[in-house]
Amino acid sequence: MQVRAILNEISKELKELNNKVDKLIKIHNDSNVLFNETSILRLPKYLQETIIIVSQNKKVKGITAEEVSNVSKKARAIESAHLNSLVGLGYLTKERVSRKVCFKLRNKY
Image: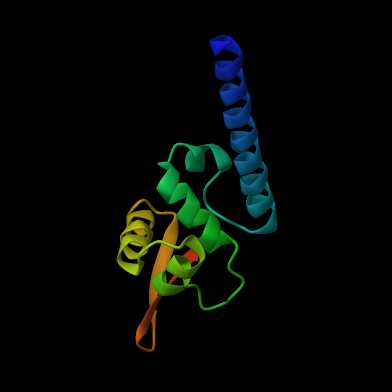
């Protein structure tokens, strides 16, 4: 009985991972981003969630930490730290737009 439960858990985790890879492939195909899917999968889960939210943003100016926190349901300060970590790792760029700081995916060009 325990073996079946373990196999069900493994199957669930594999489906979740497959869904993430599919999302990342779509993101990569839809934009000229500098990173690839495997590099994102090496990130901790909380950074994966944040970069997926940023990549789904369609605004030209970028997305603020507050907007990311509204989607993720996490505190703005937490998302701000995640976004700044992704800037430091080279996945995002950071730009001040009037009084707000906006984050965008780093492009190849």
